[in-house]
Length: 53
Image (tube, rainbow, N blue to C red; front, top):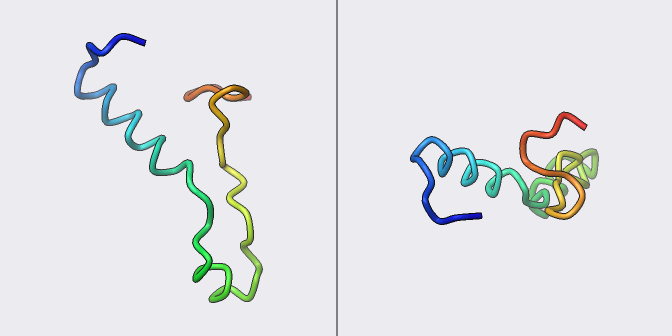
């Protein structure tokens, strides 16, 4: 991907980076292990940003 991106595109990519993180350990403990895994986690090889599948 080229380095020339609009501000709108950059904002979208930064948002996707932030969302692609595991659930913090303190949150797992606080919810009594009801949330142990971020099911919206995305792998760069298998699912691209914006894919509905």
